[in-house]
Each structure stands twice: as structure tokens, then as C-alpha cells.
Amino acid sequence: MKNTSKGASSTANNGIIKKMNVPNPLVIICAIICLCAIATFIVPAGLYDRIADPNTGRSVVDPATFHYIDRSPVGFLPFFTSITRGFQGGSSIIAFLFITGGSLGILDATGAIRAGMSTLVRKMNGKEVMMIPVCMLIFGTCSTFAGCNEEYLAFLPLIISVCLAMGFDSITGMAMVFCAVGAGYGAGCTNAFTVGVAQGIAGLPVFSALGYRLFLFAVLITINILYVMRYAMKVKKNPQSSSMYEIDRQREITINMDEVEELTTTHKICLITLMLTFVTLIIGVIKFGFYMDEISALFLMMGLICGIVGKLGVTGTADAFVQGCKNMMAPCLCIGLCKAATIILNDSNIMDTIVHALASVLNHVPTALTAFGMFIVQDVFNILVPSGSGQAAITMPIMAPLADLVGLTRQTAVFAFQFGDAFTNAITPASGMTVSCLALAMIPYKKWLKFMLPLIAIWWVISFVFLMYASGIAIGPF
Image (cartoon, rainbow, N blue to C red; front, side, top):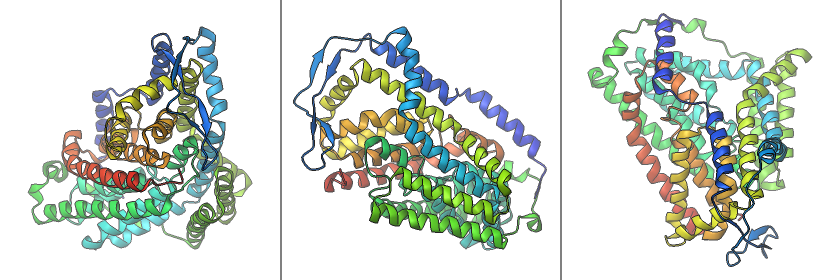
């Protein structure tokens, strides 16, 4: 594919980032750590007594035992040692992400994912009606099971080019990716980077309540496909109805489908290995209680098999694993730093005070609305910290015990988190993925926001319904 608008895209990318002036998420998290340290001098210290849950044996707070104690604000040296302790405290989750990310890096190095998606888009060329649902279903499935997101950035120019050739517009191409990812991350069936981390922090079995998530994914992906198809058909019928009409007319893009990467037998074997990995993972989680160690081992085996099948060699496999780990560096840094904030709040004994204050407010509203309130908090917070792993590390240490106090299951709190993490990713200017894709597609932010807001409103309604039902049935295991 030849894209003569590359220079314009690069300029647009720099312009969007400069105009939005968005700080790095790590800067935001460091600011949160500082605010937590300051809070230790202001917020009264308090504690709940912990008791063993008679049903599960796990330690939970006794809601009737909150009491204030002497304040113990963080000192100068403990403030900095909390960061090193944070990385030690989050080591199990960090190791899980590194191994998972490194193994997926080996798979990516074989070219199987790129070839598979390129072949999919090529086969859909000229099939206007089927292209949108088929591509979105594949993209959404990869997102909900493997946590794919940034991987789609490389395919965006091709997708947009095909959409324009079929009589759609650039927003259609952008929406095919982001709406599919929204459904995938919103359900998070076996997404190790969001749901896996959140459940691990909450003490839940990793990827528990999978059946509910599968049903949720089916609902979300169906609604999102219909939304995008309705818009695409309207544009095809009347191209001038598109807000991108004048901009798209100025594009000079030529598609050469012969240049698209071919799907070889090696690629097919690697993709089948990935599929079998997820089948084994699902069976292991449901039947044998697989947790982070076992799931990490599955991904590691998959990576090694793909390295052998892909003929990467020992050095090539190691290099690809390291590159995959590099892609996990930012989420792992976020987890370590967020754990530092949690350590500061716990050491100064103000974590329970914060939970007590939130519980006092939420106890006066219906349980279903309590879950939805958690979702709103997560959704707004995600605008500032779009990293799913980082957001889980910041909020779940508070939301998990809060759920215990207000009569929600921790699983419901995780659902509130995953909804909040997924749905504003498509519009937050703090997301590097969002900004980069808008720049690459040359779509003004206001036009994209106008397209997405009605769908986000629909997502909110779906979130309310699913959270209300989860609250009503006390979805578990706890």
C-alpha cells in the first residue's frame, strides 16, 4: 500500500499531541503518590478489624469495628522506600505481565498476527456488507481473549484505505477498530492485562465469571457492529453526510492488495497454537482453578512453540521475548508505582478511613446504584490514567474492601472496573493509542468525539443493566 499522506499524518499527530498537551500517565501516577503522602498529614487515621469470612475463609473487614487511631504520617525516607516496596509488592503481577507480554512478543515476531489480519482485510475487499461484522468480530475476539489493542495501529491505514475504496469514510475504518476493542476490553474474557490484574488484586480466581463475560461480549460486539454498520451504510448512500467528506476527498491513497503479507503454513500453525492456548486456558481456569503461575506457563509454552515453528532461532526468540517485555514496561511501571501509593495509604492507616468514608456515602443508595457509582468513578479516572493495569493497581485496593462493606461481591467491583477502563479509552486524549490513530487517520478530535458519544451513552446503559444484574445475583465466587 502506498500512502502519500504519510507526511500530513505525522504533522497531524504532532499537532494533536501538542494541542492537547497531555501529560505522561506516569507523571499523573507520581502526582497521585505525592497526594497520598500529603493526605497522611491531613486525613485522620483509622482501622477496621479483620475477620475470617465463614464461607471462604478469606480475611474481610468487620463493618462494625471502624475506629480512629493516632495519626502516623509518612516520613521523608519512607516516602521513597515505598516505591521500591511497591515494585516488590507487585512482583507477582509484574512477572505475570512480563511473561505474557514476552510470549506474545514471540508470536508477533513470527508475523502470524499481521499476516492473519492482513489476509482477513484483503479477503473482505469488495464485500462491503460482510467486511464490517467479520473484521470487528475478529478484532474484538483478539482483544477480549488476548488483550490486543496497539497491535491494530499498523493495520489502520490499510483498513481506512479499503473503507474508502468501498464507499465508506475514514471514521468507519477507525470505528471498526475502536468499537471492536471497546467490546473486547469491556467484556475482558481472558484479558490478562486488565481483568487478570484486577482479579488478582481483589483476591479472586483469575478469569472467574467467564460465562457472564462471554455473554457480555456477545451483547457488546453485536451492538457495536450494528452501530458502525448503520453509520457506514448511511455514508455509502450519501457520502456528503459524512463529516469527513471534504478531508477524505483530498486523500491520495492507492491500495495494492498484492503487497499485503501472505498467510503461510507457518503463520497458520502459530495462530492455531494461540487458539489452543486459549482453549486450554479456559478449561484450566474453569475445571482446574488455574491461576497466574499456570496461565503464565501456558503463554510461555505457546511462545516457545511459536519461536520454534516460526524458525526464529534461539537468539531471535530471546530477542522477540525481550521486545515483548519492553512493550509491558509502562504497565509494569504503573503497577509498581500504584502499589507504592497503596503502601503509603496502608502504612499511615488512612486506607480504611477512605474506605469508611466512601462506604458511609454509598450505604444510603441502592446496591445496584452503588455498583454503577463505582463504574462512573472508574470511567472518569480512566480519562486521566488510560492504562488498564495501572488503573487496576490504583483503584482495586480501595474498591475491593469497599465492595465488602456495601454488600457487593468483589466480582461486581471488577466488572465496574473493566467497564470504566474500557469505554472511555476510545475518546481520552491521554491515550497514546487514541491520539496516534486519530493522527494517522487525519480525523479531527471533535468529529471523532461527536461520532462516539452516542455509542458511549449506549455502553453506559449496558453497563448499568449488567451491573444491576450482577448485583442482584451476587455474582461470585465472592
